[in-house]
Length: 293
Image (cartoon, rainbow, N blue to C red):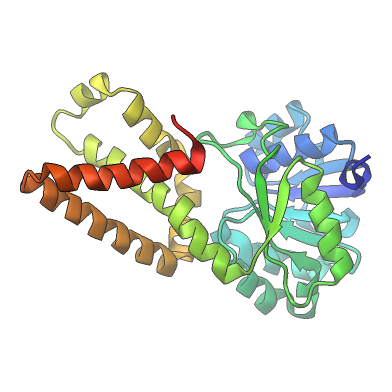
């Protein structure tokens, strides 16, 4: 039997029980990997929903979470990480490990080191590559992480045994764990996650700013629906990600704008051969990556 299926993590508390947090609770309980899962959050309605679907067993304060948890999982927006570290630092016990689900890593790691000091060794940063257009506990799914990647960006200060435990923790949800440095992580996900969200939001705003926006939406088909699906994601979360990873995102956005400007020029010049060449390059790469659609 796979070792990750038998790993056990005692009491786990999830700070921020939205889509990711509530799905994590469901996944851990489905795997039989915990004694109990507790939640910390701002919205009573959302916490009640998480309780109702069985994602958490109860609601606790941050102080209680620190005192009774073997693993503390921070699923708050990345801009709230520093404040969360500040709130838990006075109560953090030496036996408690911290991991997170933040979409950016360099800024979160810096905040952890500055706020937690020597206790930063208890923090093993992570980023589960899973989610959906909907947010909140009501959208949670026990299989959200199944077969998906979770990236670990371990610290030099982390003990090997702690990294292994957090690796098993995420693997117990069905995720495939990969490890990489924080700078590499932020550069990669600026290109393949953060930029696509910015472009999706931009297209939706562009259409809605049109005088005939309603008519355009009435006639929009599958292509528009697929492209703008992620524009329904949490605005608060993506605002924070854009600001936290702004340098890498701006680099990718500038590169994209150069390509878009080149395509505009080809269309304006009615250069059919060059347009087809560019589209063929993109189509071939897309099919090689994920198969014909």
